Amino acid sequence: MSYTLYSAWRATAPYRVRIGLALKGVPYDYSALDLIKGEQREPAYQAVNRQKLTPALDLGGGRVLTQSLSILEWLEEEYPDPPLLPKTSLERQAVRAMALIVACDIHPLNNTRVGRKLHQMGIDQAGILEWTQGWIRDGFDALEPMVAQYGEGYAFGDTPSLADCCLIPQVYSARRYEVDLSSWPAIAAVDARAQAHPAFQAAHPNQQPDAVPL
Image 1 (cartoon, rainbow, N blue to C red):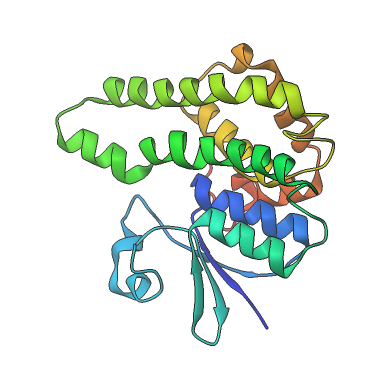
Image 2 (cartoon, helix red, strand yellow):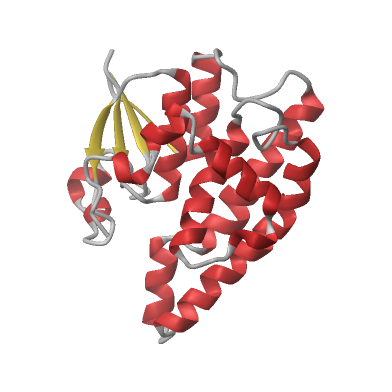
């Protein structure tokens, strides 16, 4: 069975799923959406994902998965090796907490539709940038001691986890929004380690078919 991932090259939510798919070695077809042009709001994609957000993973046979963390959890259950979650319940809680700081407390406040709404409210680009940077800093301030405590090369332990699937795209986004990472050395070290891993390299925005040279 062939899967299709509806993705946008530098959007962080589909970036998470690309990392998970690559880590698990699961092949898929790539269907690009231009979020700036609003292709996610067109009827053809609404028929795939009524929420009009990326990513969506079409399994075929009328089964479409949405929401990046839910897709990653499904991947973990369907393709358990290599694992994205550690063995004990307390360790799994720590990994999920790190992932959710990114997915619930940073990213939703910085995505395309929020930026569009801020612009409609009359906030200029400098104000939107300050807004975005502020939420990234708050989230990274919370994540840094957790990564320092649990990390042994990656965010938790010495192998990639669900936390890294979320953290690495958020670091990419932080650089995109001109956030200086020097305040979070543990996070920066994890990102450096991940950039040498083939799965993270394959999932990187610049390697996607819809990537735009900057």
